[in-house]
Length: 351
Image (tube, rainbow, N blue to C red):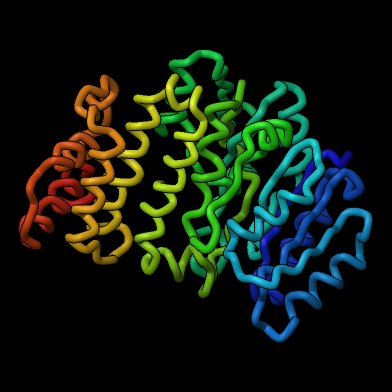
């Protein structure tokens, strides 16, 4: 068994993926301990990405698997394909235009083994022509903050499930493969907000999590990357994925029953509140009044008892303001825009 499996989805990245490969090849951990799974997500660059992946495989055939998908399923779908082949003790995800710090694999593996952690969440650095270069590499070991959490404490687990601790990104985490397999998680496909469907359920099953300020992952911000070019045009994929997530959590009957109020609050926050906030501020995209009404109906259908949620009283004012609107009669565009302003103002992002 390899120590670590790394899954790398690739789409039209012939000019970028070799740098990502170099960041793996030059790890302080021996390459023989690493399994790299590259998935060509139906690239449309006349075979250039596939040609480059073949070159990478030829360099390290004992450590590299390359897979070609006939259908473009975006990063989530490509990662799902990679998960079918991953056999390492631990799991990581790398986007084909990003890179790892040279000691990422060794450092994370040693931390995970020392503390028997199911998940380690770390930091990202942002670099590239569009990003301000930030790094914590110059900090002394004593300056790096780390905290371990025992999720056997239900109160701690609920803090993860309501996003008061941790987050639901996937590339800033190091996963015990046993947890991933036992939780039977997968990514949303054909969308760019694919990560919560994979990450969120893991916090319902993990026994212990380490959160560190170490930055092991390097985002390469450039023209054409998802981070810079597509977020504003895919607003409606955000609530769509949250619907997939709540459907998934409902099927996990024991978990759903035990953490009902935390899961409810997360849904109201992520599906309803964040969509309103993103529409008003973060994404510059229009949210139709008709879909807002559909969101209200879905919240009421799933959680008719949402007002009795004891956690709701302790959350952020903007979540409370949004929750108040679930049963409001908002029939005009003017009133709807006023609600979006109210939510954004309660969140402190507009005056």
